[in-house]
Length: 109
Image (tube, rainbow, N blue to C red):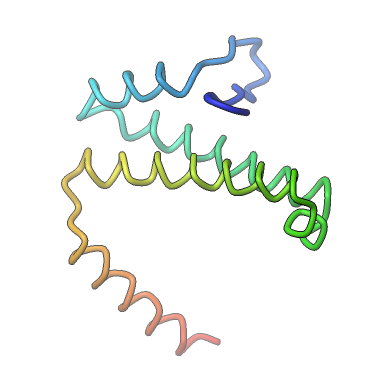
């Protein structure tokens, strides 16, 4: 998937490049949220596909698969970061929410 992502919809829509999606999200600050969520879903789907098709152990031990897995995770992080920047979410806000979520989860399990 180097440099882009696959449009996995069943409606025959064409493949878009990461740059095209970034331009859409970047210029559509108020309405970009839905598009961003869809892109993240495709990117995390690529990560899941690698592990599902090859198994977790092979995905991290095989050098070529591991490189592909890490690249796809980098895509996920790039889009995640774009959402944070787009909506002005600070590191402190994220850190606090993360801490509270972990604490809440610890009481559930």
